[in-house]
Image (cartoon, rainbow, N blue to C red; front, side, top):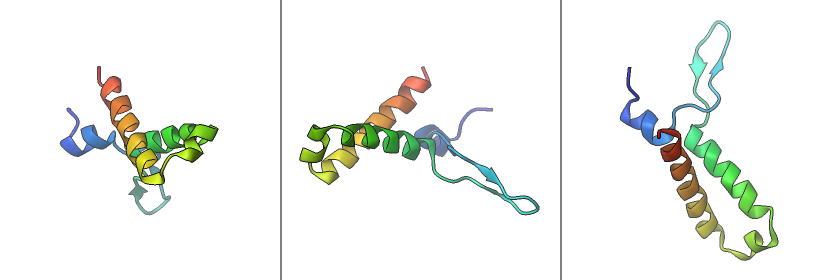
Length: 73
């Protein structure tokens, strides 16, 4: 079965959690996880703190999208 458009764009759930006796919650998407990891890397340098926050957030998601694309190849 192929990935749905939403799953392909977001990578699907990164940390799904089965709540015993209840339901499964998806948690964050893999795209969000990748972006958070990219942002953490950017902020780990002095140069990262010199850039504007909105720029860094956009860049983090750009990296996340590239990681999702590379993962499908």
